[in-house]
Length: 113
Image 1 (tube, rainbow, N blue to C red):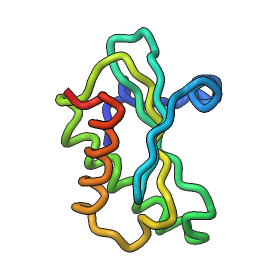
Image 2: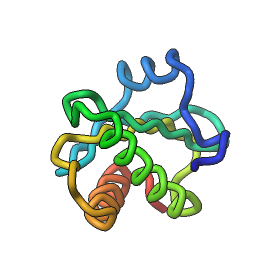
Image 3: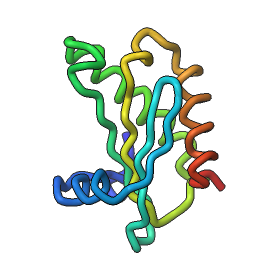
Image 4: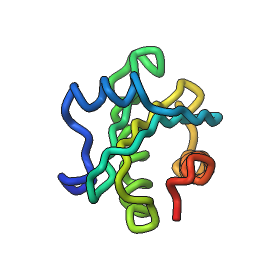
């Protein structure tokens, strides 16, 4: 679980991120990010019904991505809002595959120090 200060929770912040953020796209995941002028980076996971109709599958993917983020939290740049969009290609993939894709996207977005 991510610490409270690293969670992007308010609808207003998420809408601003999707409206004004930059995007980076991978095989299993996509990122939307923008500066937030805060000391910490905040993250949100998004897995829509198109990923899987089963909530169990969507929630498992979100938990896997959160665990990966938690493990690499110290290496990430500060002061960004980030939305991680889980794509339907991620269903059935291992945590290792998701971790490789996420780290590649964070490097591409220059969010990984």
